[in-house]
Amino acid sequence: MGARIKEAIGTESVRSFSKRCSISDSLLGAYIRGEKAAGSENLSSIAEAANVTIDWLATGKGLKTRTQQRAAQGQAQYQISAEVAPVPRIELALLRQCLGACNIVYGAPFAAAAVARQLEHAVELYNALLPNIGPRLSLEELAARDAASIAVMLQGLIAVRVVRPYP
Image (cartoon, rainbow, N blue to C red; front, side):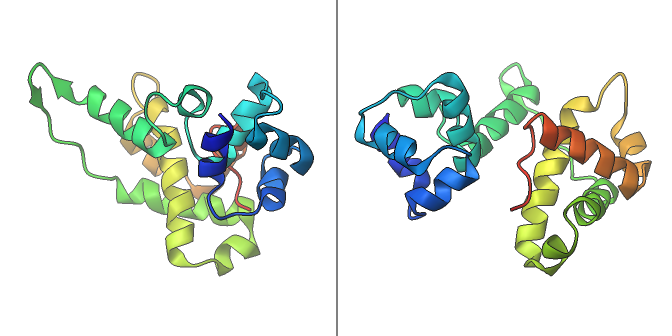
């Protein structure tokens, strides 16, 4: 597991990464060296901070990144027998509301960030909202909400660690 943690951290320093996942750098170093095994809570924090799946981090099996996992889950939702149904287009109104919600919640640092970075967080919020669409709430109803109400949802998703907070 230590090698996978090191791979997940990449070029980021252990100290910097440990701050992002709220684990001491000495403990994280012990995990990397194989001196200690990470418990489920720390394993979850590491996986979240590195955007990798817990399964891959713990066992080396399964999909490595959460992005791959979400894509696979999304593809499975649109699988109809042996044929793959077309993936629906992104609802631009909802994506705009997600950008607005990120601006409200994250403030000036987010507004000053590069557009690609802003979009990355807005799309993460967008994807986190998609499982809520269905019998309770349609995509159009969600897109019709204002950025402030989406911002409240974003804060809740951050609190339950579905969406990572903007640094």
